[in-house]
Length: 443
Image (tube, rainbow, N blue to C red):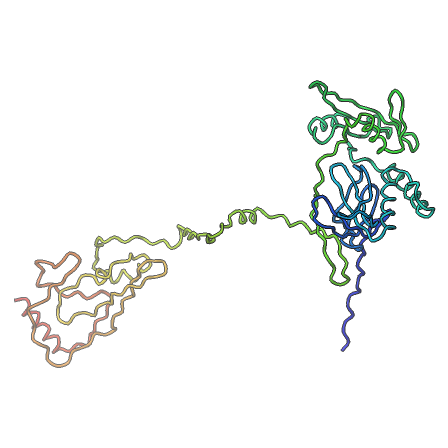
């Protein structure tokens, strides 16, 4: 069975490596380091960048040469002879020591550093290295002509004055675009004279590839860096370039190694998705350590007032009617729920054989009201056979809603519910016996 062809494999984009004037292995020891650390180093402009390996596009450390003081050979401690593999770079406020593999490598690093710092080719070089330094010098001059100094800020005249006033510790000289819009530049300085603020603005014109400082005696500079250096050197260091405190990175990144080819790349993680108002509220209500999470208590729903409404039943006795058994089937849906002791109703006096009793078991409907069952009677009354038993003069007292009845009429006839069929096939003998019993009861 043939398998479906897979998707075409997209080649991974290779990281772009920065270009350097010179690069190679360097062992670096800073003022806080106990021993040397080996890096892959590259010189570009006035900065030496350090990498973990020659395949890493992102540097892990750098050294700025703008505060360069001196570059000397360095002999190991406790040794009087120079092995030719170490040199010391002196900067303003610190000294950094380097170690290389050979004397030739050390001299090449020193020549490249001096060329970009002093903008001139060292005189003690052989023709081959001297030609290389000339090419590097041309590139550095072109870079400086196009590159603006770190104290350049794209602000207006008023904004430059406010920045120097608000951040006096960051410097007192600032380079900014000119106000005339002709491509020129301006230098703004701020100094204090006997407690009084002194703000000055100087115009720098652009003529071809040169920059002219417009003062009484115009000064021509090859780059904006030379313009800044001119103000620093001619004021005996009183003017300091303005450098805002923005040395911290704004984007989080890390070095990630590729397991397939072993190359390391600089990776920027994606920012997390923004939380909704409901999720943010949940994160704020998380329990602290050692506390159990608080479960939300469920509130029972409020029942609808129109549904499942039950009519309250009082304990007071209700009125009883003679034809209650006949009315109950027609008022089945409206009859109130009565207590079990009142459902049977009052018992009549026993006159002969008692009538069949209606079962007093209420049936409650879903609506909460008691419904009385429909009474059922036999279609024919049974006729007794044989002689009747002698009549008894003792009758049980019937108890109704209001207790036993007093002074009952002896001549009361047993009431037969209306509508009930009575048998007409009674024999003459039965009728005669009934009349004799009635006569006895009337005496």
